[in-house]
Image (cartoon, rainbow, N blue to C red; front, side, top):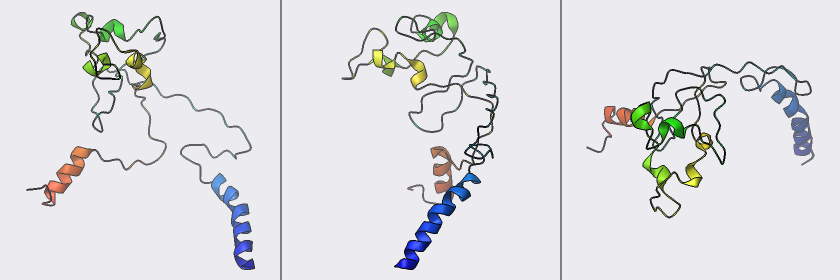
Length: 154
């Protein structure tokens, strides 16, 4: 029992020292007690090309810059191009019909207040390398691999 206690104490002392060196990728190698300089924010991808969604019901990414877009109780700059009445002139995709529904599923004549603040769900994409390795595989790739293995439910 005393050996376990001694081991646990040694582990508690060693973990912060070990963790300090394991934060690379998300945090620079600066010791935790010191401040590091913030990295430059990578540029926004501003191609106006629709991005492929990675999973069902993923909110679409914003394919253009939104710097200085005003979105508050009085103004929503996004609706200048994406509202039902503006898409003919702007050629931008119209906001989803789900954005016109209230909590009970009733269709409204205007955008639902709970869907009015676009950037709560929709974000711009930055031209940046991921800080950590990501092994995400989209559902189509999983299904393709399953069919290749003969487990496609045939």
